[in-house]
Image (cartoon, rainbow, N blue to C red; front, side, top):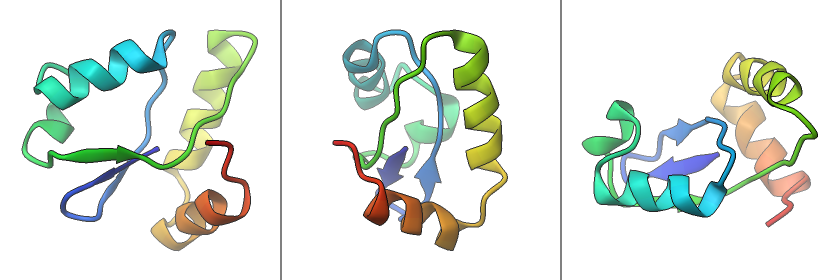
Length: 78
């Protein structure tokens, strides 16, 4: 999960996290983030396969912002 300059939280998946963050920060990543730079990595999880990662991404995207913040502060893996 990424925190944007407008305090919104972006959730996504990537095979190569560092590469994806670099693309986001340069403005070549997700369209949602382009007007919300700078961004800060707040939370990450690792999965064996894309299917599991996608299921978790969908679950997190359905969470309320307060729930995401709670997750970030209680389970932070960074």
